[in-house]
Image 1: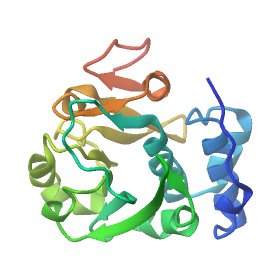
Image 2: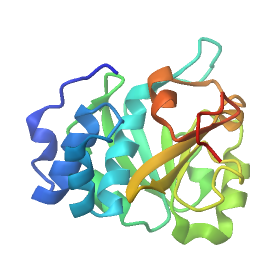
Image 3: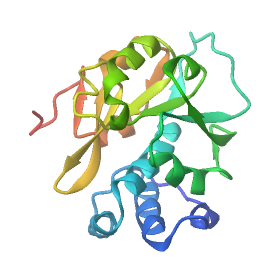
Image 4: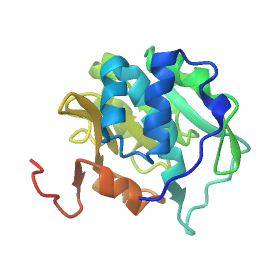
Length: 204
């Protein structure tokens, strides 16, 4: 797995516990399975870890040549609904760049406002409308991420899951293939499960 350097100021706005897990997850290039990351995750909240992953997903995705989507001046990570993960990610992403563009955290009230986002997080608190939200976004070039138990089954692309008391993620390639989004093989290799792809050993 390749590594990449993360600017020190990335963690300036986060508290010491959040900074530890964010640094560990990001520098590890999404793996977050070393003992140091395990220790950091034990101290951090799930929101800290999910925020680190959410920001980092943008570094492992791109649009295919066939996409007609306009390249926006900012890389927008949208938070649908009122979810605490937005507060965490806003603290360290505001001065960073993804795909050469300044990262921007945007809160949206409904799925219709998320169609121009690069990534949208739909929290479990909005469980009553998740299936409807994903149906609205289906086929759009927006990476949909969530943490509800049925997120992949409902048509989401990446779902946060817990494995051995650590936050990890699963991927639904069937949903991704309806768009022009392309996910890096590096990201797929560290997913605990890839729906629509080769089934890893031990996957349900």
